[in-house]
Length: 307
Image (cartoon, rainbow, N blue to C red):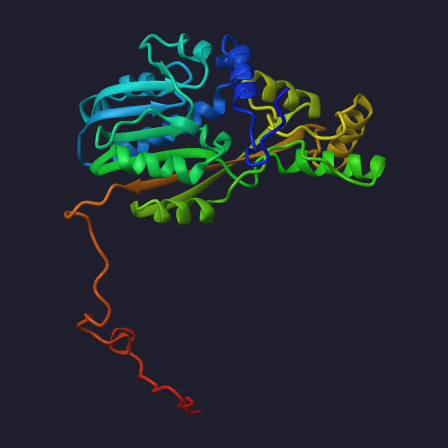
């Protein structure tokens, strides 16, 4: 039996298995995927250029392709759109085919794409800097990368309740909810990978459920339950889940008794460098002093303001 690789956070084979199981019923719980895809389409609609060769990573059976088909303007902006997904069962839910690929090892040829999109997949990637570096190499000059993934506030209520329930029972807590990056982390990673004009945005969505068990059912149906490469030393018992449900109800419910679940959708936008892109002016090239622009008196270093 293979020992767990301590450098890997996520078990990609387990994730693929859960995605395969979730594929047939995914449409019933696709509201976050739909929101992320609609946001991508809005962003593309504001960009005044055409992308001849595009790739949708984590397509889940053609959600982006279907959205583009519904937007008349986007049909003229996006040429050939290829689809890739970790789950074969997810791919066959669509009508456009596609190919099976793992975001940890994407088969991308250099300078082969004008647009790369990924919606709600990056938070499962073990080597995010490596993925971004590969995407940067695959994009042609002035090519666009658009990524949406779950951010740090996602499932914060669930994480806290499991941690408290296990700490009460065992004196320690175990990882039950995946860690998620924040917007600042994402923007810095884009810069390190060599992308120009990096932008990170956050969209916080609150979803209400009858109780914790409704949330857990949705996460399972989405294929989004935790898939750690290194398993916790203690199994998650029914008693711990029941205690977490009580804590959730006590601390995160509304007046009508329904509980809240937070999902943070972070979108990263970056461009492959091109000479036509706007660049910051060289230091010292300003033609007007800041003090003049603000209508104030410039105070030399070391001088205290009067009055």
